[in-house]
Image 1 (cartoon, helix red, strand yellow):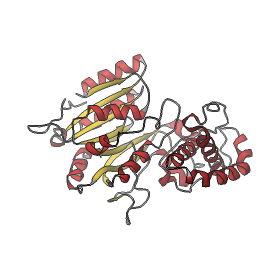
Image 2 (image 1 turned 180 degrees about the vertical axis):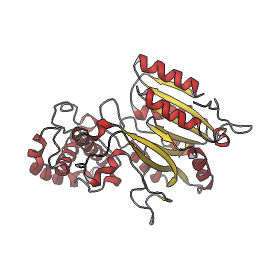
Image 3 (image 1 turned 180 degrees about the horizontal axis):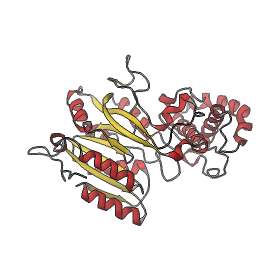
Image 4 (image 1 turned 135 degrees about the horizontal axis):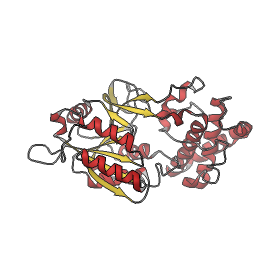
Length: 346
């Protein structure tokens, strides 16, 4: 690994950008991510600092993470409590830049990633507060042929190469802001309180939606959100994610996430959606009895998993699915931003 600057300070001042990598017990992936940051151009590296947040890794992994962070010149923050949103907020609290970029530990930035990000930040309008980038897959196994075509996005893949403002004409819905490659202006992100720690992954719980929720709060305060496909990372798609049981869990937790968000937005949408989800679930219930590893009727089963998650998530919130998480039927699923999934499984 080429040496990275320890502080990332610009000339005569603090860094423009703080790069935060949150990790839990995955030193192999973290090593590749830090290698990618070390390969950024010298001028860009002088303008960013790197912060690694260890989210409650067990002792052996924690030692490896500490060694990798030291070798990369990164500041290391240790959280004794697990949780992705908590880890992101710890990084936010320690960041010294004007902007903060978050990378997943299994994402490797292109060599010009930091330059492209800093260039775009400098050109954004004053009310810009968030910026997403392109996320290209690195397949550890080929995508299986049974995988529903409209559910490719649940693997955190964003391939649109253009630039635009999220939610505005001309910017397609697939130009989304995903946690594997996203950046925020620090002042507005701190002003709204950072990420909601009741959302986001904690261990095997795949409740998500914290990224969409933080964007919603920024929009509510009249901030603007952008996407630039020139800001590129390569994201590892682990082989275990290409199994039917994993996909069903992902869609279950998508439903739970959407229900929780609908309730928090005042509840009227949740009250409209719940009867529809219950009606669909009554027709899909038999599909949920299929063996979790079966690939039979996957799209319909994903719809059933989503609707089950929505019903449970609305009733019991973040506890949704814990009682059945390991029951072998594949009900629990996960979440990606609902605006991207749209009606793919519902």
